Length: 152
Length: 211
Image (cartoon, rainbow over all chains, first blue to last red; front, side, top):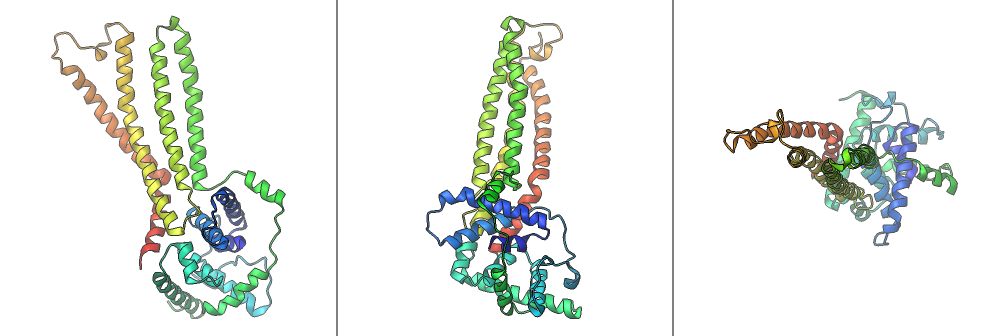
């Protein structure tokens, strides 16, 4: 899970390594205060996403936000057969253009977290979350159209 | 691109082998310096504290030991300043601790970070500004207390024949513009240091709160 957060929020390997280190440090510091009031996974997501979102620094290399196909993928080092790989590349390229909060929402959604748990992690009420998720879906559709047909 | 159709592709990531971190590697990670903004602010604070100690300690010793102790008042002035600065550093350190709240939900955590950072900045500006007149007044008192009235030191004593209010007025006329100038300098400096970070946090918070 930590690797996924690092991949979502950082483009270069160095940035990912820095963020991973920061999350591990925060987990280490916060663990003595973990009282089991929430699920361990909820606590873990909170620490990882909080660290990723609030520790934002200037990224070492930024991809161009204009053309999804031109973007170097953060998955260059991974090899997946055919369509699956393409889908993942598209997913990462599209997610990279979302805001930090939207990235967190998408990740939790893809991780199959319930809206109740998403509310616990993000602190946004469920109705609001649903509205935001619909907007993100729409945004991703639009981005794909732009990338495929050059429609703006 | 349909988000739901990507769930399967996303799940394959979970089954992908990730680099194993041995306890030794984790320990090594924990021993490295954190690059987070709060950790950097804390390191800056420790640096400031060390700089104060390194510069003030020899000065305090010098004024206590030299001149047969006649200028020990200046050494006490420095000690008083160190005490004021210790309170200042303690307060800053507590605010930095409050800023590290990663276990809250993200919205509360952002809100707390923004509030604490604002309080930190306010304290930084106020304390940095107030220190100027406080130091000037203390220096003035020490000089009047320790040094006899001498020609050329009229600034510190009432000039004979002049009305009683003229002397404090001259001091006020000097202190007010300097203090105001230092205030704006501090505002500019903290803006440069933390302005971008606080704006980013506020934007994130706004995005979370908007419906």
